[in-house]
Image (tube, rainbow, N blue to C red; front, side):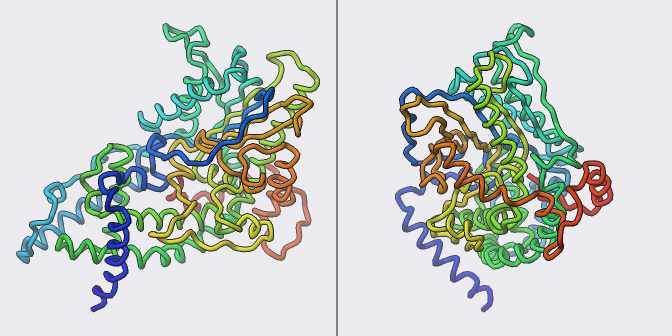
Length: 492
C-alpha cells in the first residue's frame, strides 16, 4: 500500500511530462540534464537578447572565472561504483533464484563492471576536459582580438588557478588555446606561460570555501536535512524501478545508478545503459535533487555561501579599476594588464554567479537586497532558472568585459556580463547584460562589500570581532589541524 502511494505522484508527473513533451520525445537528451556533471558542449544557449554595444566602445579588459573541465570520478566515487557492481550482481542473482520475471531487465546490467575498476587515481582532467578549455581559449582570443594582440607577459595576461591539479591543468589547456601560434616552441609555435596558485590553506580568492570555518560548519549541519529533502523523490523512483525491473533496489542503489548515468553520459557518451533505466520524468526529478542540493549548499540557499566569495569580487573590481587607470594615463602597451583569468571549481563559479545576481526568479533580487531567504527551486514539471547544467557545468565560466566608450556615450565605461560565453541579464543592471560601470559598482558590487571575509567566515554569530583579520600563518595551522575532519567528498 505504501509503495502504491509513493508511485502515484511519480505516475501523475510522468503522464504530465509525456503529454507536454509528446512531440519532443526524440528531442530529449539526458546529456542536457546532468546537473553539474554536464559537459560544456551539451549546455544549451539562452534565448536572452543581448544589448547593443554603443558605437565606438572598445573592450579594454577582461575578467574570467572558470570551472575546470570534465574530470574523471574521484577515488571515493570509483569505490562507490565498485560497490554498485557487487550489489547489482547480488540482486540479479536473488531475483533469478526467486524465478521473478526479468524479461524487462537490460542485458548489460546482469554482468556489469565499473569502467573505472582497478584505477588507482581519480578526479583528474579528462581528454574532453582538456579540449573544452583549449577551445574556450581559442574562442576567447577570436572574440576579443584587440585584448590579446600583444606579446605574452604574465603581468599583461596573468593566469591563476587553485592548487588542485584539475584546475591548474584546465588553466594550461586554456592558455595553450589562447596563445596558440603566438610563441616559438615547436612546429605549432606554442607559447610558454605561467600559471600561479595560492596555497589552498590560505586561498580566499579561488578556494574561499576551504578557508571558511563557518561555511564548513554550515555545510556539515545541513547535509542531513538536504538528504531528507531528496529522499521522497528518490524513494518514489526506487519504487518505480523495482516495479519496472523486478529487482529489489534500495534508495542507495538508485542514487548510485543515477551517479553512474551521469558519469557514463558525460565521460563516455553512453546514454543507453544506466541512463536508459530512467524515463525522462525521472531524469528531470533526479536532476532537480542535484540542483536543490547545490542551491542549498553552494548557492542562494544561504547568504554565507556567496558572501564568502567577496574577496574574488573585490579582485575582479580592483582589476577593472587598474585597467581604467592605465587607460586614462595612457600607459605604454605591454606595461599593464589586459585580462585576468582564473580557474577553479563549481564551489567558486556558483557563489560568484550568485554575487552577480544571476539565475534569479521574479522579485528574488529584491529579497536578496533585503537579506530575506529565498524559496527552493520549483520542482518539475514547473520551470526554473536554477539549473546547474547551466549554472556550473564542466568548464562553466563567467566573463566580465570592461568597455571604454566615447565621451558622447551615456557612460564612459560599461561592463558586460557573459555566462558560458552568452550575455545574461543582471538584475542589478535592470535586467540588462550591459551595465554602466558606476551602476554595476553601486547596485551589484557595493551591497556585498560591506561584508568582511574574516567576519563572515571566522566569527560566530553574536560574537564581536576583537582582533584584526587572521594571518595567513594562523590560517595555515588551522587548516592543517582541521584537514582530517574536512569533508570534501562532494567537491566539484
